[in-house]
Length: 427
Image (cartoon, rainbow, N blue to C red; front, top):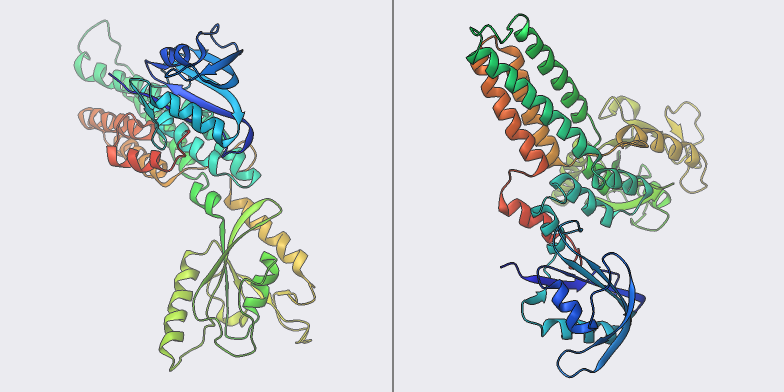
């Protein structure tokens, strides 16, 4: 028999209201034990909560009763809306813990039960996880779309299309000699359907990365020593995050600083100054790490000579224009000290970031989703490339398995354990 779990599902106390959620077969019994009544389903009622051991008054609270399976977890579920003081919460939780069959929930256990009972698929779970961690409006909007099932509905449409294509393929294989099954043009319709579905999946794979949205667009500041990288970093993030000195080679290692510019998350990275050679072993390691940061950068701010720009799409920055008044230096002229040119740089960064992040009404994909999507596209491409219906049927079968990976119908327990462990106790 499944345990009944309980946990504080609202914010950390003290607070105005504390919501304690109870989910499982004994949820109704727990409500009767503390409140002495079951209110009408989905209607709040004021009740006195008493300790079932001695009848002592615990609190006056709103109680709600949600009979399963049409609940958040797919099970019987009750909520206690208590006063949000620490002592009240502790007393109510202690009383619940004395009831037979009840125990405290583990991290993410409510959401895991919703997933196990078919109330959410894995994409919605990941969207909820992102929503709980969202710090910018872009993160919130994209996570909400995923949590509300926009992507899952699209994937479900693909699954239905795959089932239809598989049925047509099996009919073409098994019943092509039967008079009541027309095979004229059936293979062409199968090929057309596979081609269209492969195009949709390919377009999906071009969706922005959820990791980039969550962690921030990676902006790497690079160039020779004393080019003004650390001063520019400090100006961009609005605080003294990096040591600034006239001594060449002050920055020995990468310095990563998250910051939001006008609601867009960035991860700015200051790097060691790059030069042809050095006798300093520590500086050499720093330069190697700087080159590694350049390889992983979404946007590069290059503060060095134009002829040494490390990548064609790097932004050339003519920094320290308050010191160097030469007008022939190419790039964005700015001074991190006086602020000259900073508005223009910020505008360009936001424009570049907008092309890398989901727009209004778009969602972002996690690595797991992109990997499963790539498998799905690979099987569809293989089916499209083959003239043998037996191979087409097998590739379509494996494509359906890739769909199950996308939705979470198929997956490994250790992956699920890692995902749900990242949730808070009350989720």
